Length: 484
Image 1: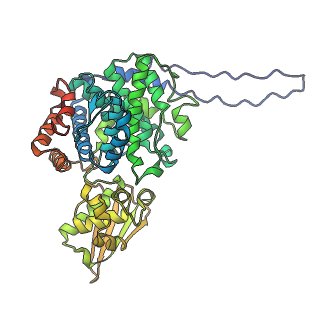
Image 2 (image 1 turned 90 degrees about the horizontal axis):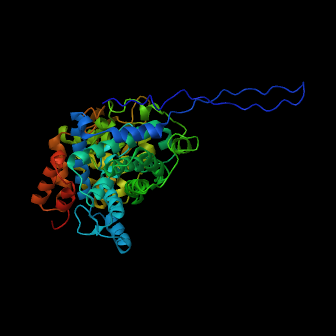
Image 3 (image 1 turned 120 degrees about the horizontal axis):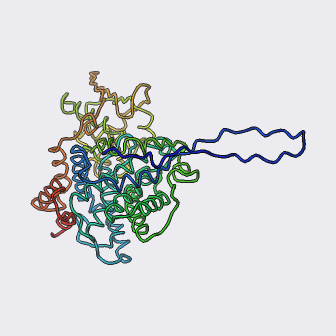
């Protein structure tokens, strides 16, 4: 379905009021060209959100939506007992409202607002969730956390849930496209700032909001951006997608009761995009609605860390396994990298697993020592392993012209003078080299191990694959709680 927005975009004109002339010699003021008015982006988006349906989604978009959901459930289960989640559960439990929703891998129940927040935290704490590479947004966390919490209070069919999930991902990623990279470069955590839009759109879709209510929901989401990049490497980073989920849910619930906002909160002069970014490309939001899907550009991480470190891990694992290099024989590891790599992951001496997720030095060392980059390789144990500590001191990353942020050029020099080289153009997990369904299943199984019994984890995974056939998606959440 191609979404028609012509009815909303007319020829905008701005009248400049000239001051009265005081006498014959008064000089006529210089005329400043009128700025071109932006299209009514918020309304266009609201109309498309409500017009979308499961039947209008292309088959490949539906498939990617299911893969996104499966990946999200896996990382939410895997992160459910991280210290960060334990702290948040302990802090919020005394203040929670009615027990409306459960959490994957745990027995506690919370009101849906807190459940959405905690699910967002759990699904992001490993930094193992999906990534929209154009913007570095982690799309499923804010959206799936919000709508699964809602679906535990009111039954939602798998078809409606999948449509809402795709609509939410599309909304947050398109808005992110409009302001990236300037918005991100200023220091905002883009998942936290764009996530509320996705969550509000998805929940509002399930609630059956009117067009005006959806406009209000998007406006209220715009008023709740959250997250600064300074938080990276701490528990605070996972707070951001968690809060984005609850903020979007909050926005939709208020809008459903008629809580108003501006009709142009995304595009207005003092609205979201103009306030928090020096770049605004409205076409990224409005063009190709219903024909071009950002969900098809979603990717899934094979490695539990920042996406810019994936090429380095890929290269290191290849050299270790294919060239049979032993870490004790390595004299030096040279990396040619993009500037963003050192900006985001320049921690030279991480002390915790969370800090290790933002250390290119640790990423190179752990790949060469253990030949992997899963959650176990970004634990407190791994970053303090003497072999890893010794090797990361030999890692020398150099900003190099011609190297993209998704690439790396690695040369490992041994003590006997031999060199081994890899240049990674597209790491595993990228759009060009995507993870297969089998690899996603293996990732899910590994994350669930030790959290849920094998048979229970397998049942939840099969329910995720069968998402469009489910009559009540709340069954997935109930099947994934501890002791189910």
